[in-house]
View (tube, rainbow, N blue to C red):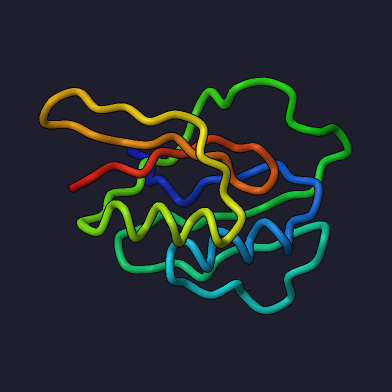
Length: 115
């Protein structure tokens, strides 16, 4: 017996709003029927489904799991993410590896890796 990764779920104050940010970030579409309580992003080939669920409590600590995005257009993509509502938190340059940690509009951390 085995399991297959179906998707990732994100707790949020406004599911539709956060789904829109991530859909724009990933170049995908918010699935029909999105509301403040629940939204998802249409899946792409080989990419897990992202779902967003409204919860009453705000985010209060650093994520234990975060997304890593990779781009060949690091500076342009960093500017685009900021324009979409991301906040730049930390820049890391370790010789051949470079990434920036951002927070989405609700404070969930994610990394943009130069690739």
